[in-house]
Length: 239
Ligand SMILES: [Zn+2]
Image (cartoon, rainbow, N blue to C red; front, side, top):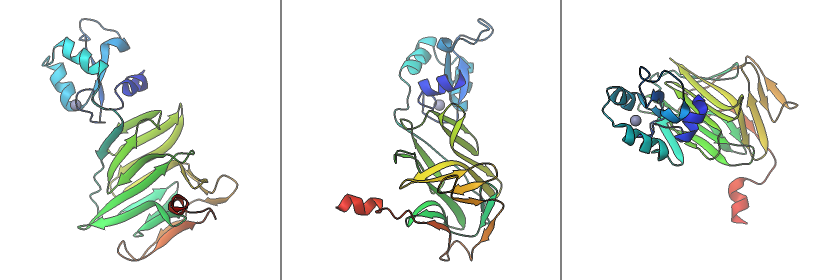
């Protein structure tokens, strides 16, 4: 039911679109103590507090429920405050290295540096080659038409293809970014479970507990580079 309410509002506050959302009862719980989705709406903490204080008439909230703010792209930003960021993909750790996962010379996961702060970049394609989500300099954007669920809490974003099918999970804890999920590029499948990183599908390369340390985010360095042998996406457009 929580997902259905999130989806109805296109994964953002029905009033402002903020993806950090809570569930509000349009009819106060004290008057009608039941979980009826038609009387519930998702709101950000700010608008939830105002709704709880009865700032909005019921009619307004019902209009917002019918015509939520978000239409197609959902966005917010992570804050990565540390200088020494480790990226953990499954149980593998990448320290001080800029290009972390590259396929056909295209950066799937990378870290850049701006005024001493590391910036996370992830290009997330689905198995059909659609650009479903992007994290660009810590700001994340999701094309809601490509995903079944967007579950966002502070420092923690989960995108799902379907029930219990995690497609991308990014979790930030102090100085580590944890990345799990299923990523695709040029037909190459990259799967990161809790423990294992499979490069090129389950029967290809398996990595567990590896540590790659680079010479710094300003230095040239690539941790994992894969080549599919396919024509690069940009070249195929030129033909
Ligand atoms: Zn709001």
